[in-house]
Amino acid sequence: MTATQIVTTGHRAPRKKMTRKKWQTVIWFVALLAITAIVIYPLLWLFASTFKPNSEFGQNQGLIPLNPTFENYGTIVEGIGGVPMWRFFANSTILAVSAVIGTLFSSSLAAYAFARIKFKGLGIFFASMIGTLLLPVHVVIIPQYIWFNKLGLIDTFVPLILPKFLATEAFFVFLMVQFIRNLPKDMDEAARHSTAPARPGISRPPTLARSARSRCSARCCSRASS
Image (cartoon, rainbow, N blue to C red; front, side, top):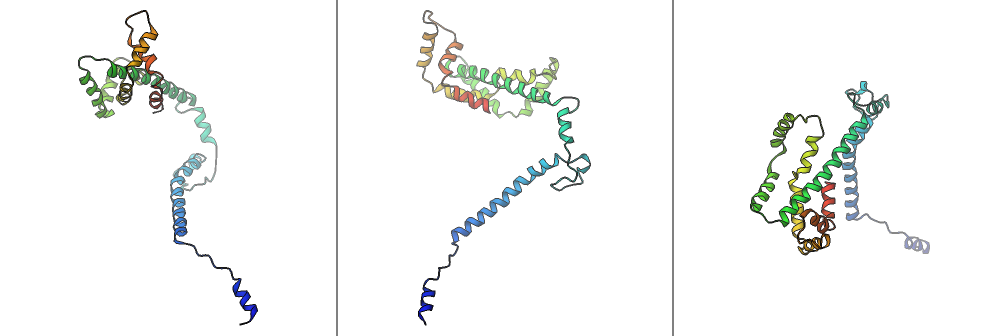
């Protein structure tokens, strides 16, 4: 063996081998890409179908439309069934804002009564309220429809908004009750004296507004978001 061969073999770079951990990472990455493609494809197909004309529905099952058009978007802007699109957004905004305001107002008052005011039958009323969580919506929706139909309130916002102002959301009432019970009662006394120091007594709503509004803001935000 010559010196040239020794030098050449001595400077040969070692071959890097992929470890088992790297192979597992590659396999997991490929599997995640495949799962992501399966999940995203229906959304892509749905979006691409908005550019298909009516003649291609039921015939072209592919992703790319053969004759793309924007006619479908024009139909949506014009409205459906003679009702303009802005009316749908306006109705949704009215119902959402009214439901949030009504739920926050009524649930907070009912929760304060359960948590702070002692009266006969408190446990029975509270247990009855919790029991309404076990009732499916379908059990009460038909009697509610019959009732509102007799009052002539069908096709109005009242059947959808009025229950929100009557503390019908038992879960939110229970959530606020558990939170208000953990608040120190000294806050109520401080609120009474700060609101009307000259009068010996004061009504409950100002006390609730002053003592609990700062500490209940997080709970109110969670109810509004849900």
